[in-house]
Amino acid sequence: MNTFIVQPVTAETLPDLVALIVDREDAAGRLNFLRERLAGGQLKLENTLILRSDKGVEGHALINAVPQIPVFPHLRSDAPEEAVKALARAILDRVGPGQQLLLDSNLASLQAAPFEAAGWVLDSRHVMYETDLRARTYPLDPQAQTVGADQPEIRELLKQLGQPDLEVSDGWMLIALPSADGLTAALGAIGPGGRLDTASINLIGVLPPSRGHGLGTRLHAHLLALAAQQFATHAGGTEAENAAMRRVFEKHGSRLAATQMYFVQKNQG
Image (cartoon, rainbow, N blue to C red):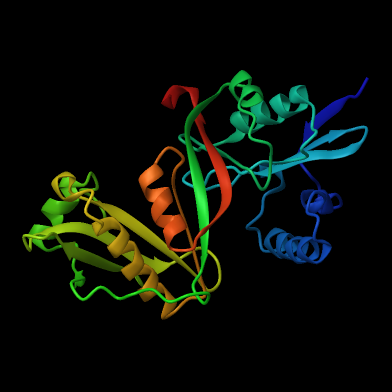
């Protein structure tokens, strides 16, 4: 019978945190980064979890001290369900208030059952896309305008689109597009992503009366054109059931890079 255990790593067993990475060059680079963070005090070993069996490392997770950053478990595809449940429960015992858990299809099988059995609540499903901005060109829309989030008209539009508190971070631009009657009806934002040479886009939305006329597609193409002026790649996502946005991604040459499942703590569900 296969046995398993969940425990934090030690300085000596730190390589176990990269044991499941197939690309050994990538694994070596990540291990060096972890060692640097450990030496600098940014990595706390008590926030690392390793799932082991008599076969070796079955999975692991790093729990960020910032609760807004989800936990991304990395698991062997054939890890036993009971073992996965044990890791999920150990993560739940250590996360901060409101911290989410995110299953990514590149890191783990998308099996909700062991996480729900451990006390997590499945909240939503998302799909992530990547776009090679050097593979094709995108048109700049002549009607698009750069706007400020503090403009009364834009603040009201943000409220109608369900993002009344949105703030534009440094390096980001807020772009508006009018409907056929000349009134601002669509908003989106473009800025640097979390990876080197990668852009992020927030297609904030189109007012309901103006939907179905291609405004979202035009705005997305314009934002990609702006991104291509500074970046080589775009990464973005949407809810798995958002068929309209998925068609926009596919129309613009984006490829499906991952499917993700978001879990919240039971008291958030």
